[in-house]
Image 1: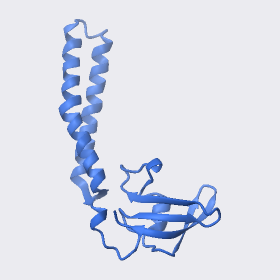
Image 2: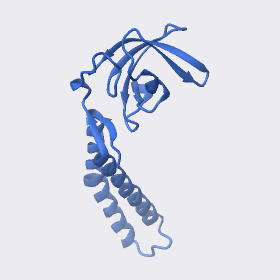
Image 3: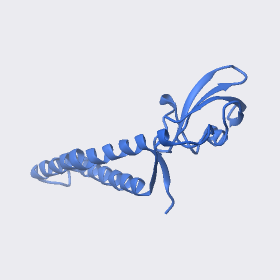
Image 4: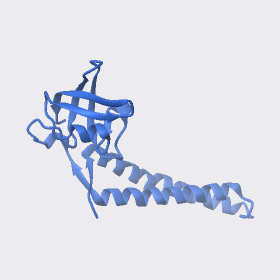
Length: 158
């Protein structure tokens, strides 16, 4: 099985979700199923069906998270020393060459990506174009509207 890169923060979030699912959600759905069973005829009991569906989702999500954590390669960006190069976990300040627009992204695992928070997936086109670059380099990114060039302003490991 191959390893999945994930930041320390991302692994903590997955562990928190796993704990919540196992110790809050799972017991609550067991109670809901028991209450629905007590109502009698299960063949026409919408509450029972909904609780069983929710139980299936919770159990599936628990298995998914446990699988991801078992295959995770946890990387702490603050302990990186990549000599100023863009690597997984680094935070990069960029300037789009045509518009002059400045953006900041952190390169994270697929499960952690959230563009609104400036977290981009390691498998995204922009992250792939940035890997190995350093301050002053230009990364050409194939975007839906054509190629966009970004100058790397600064690389940080936080």
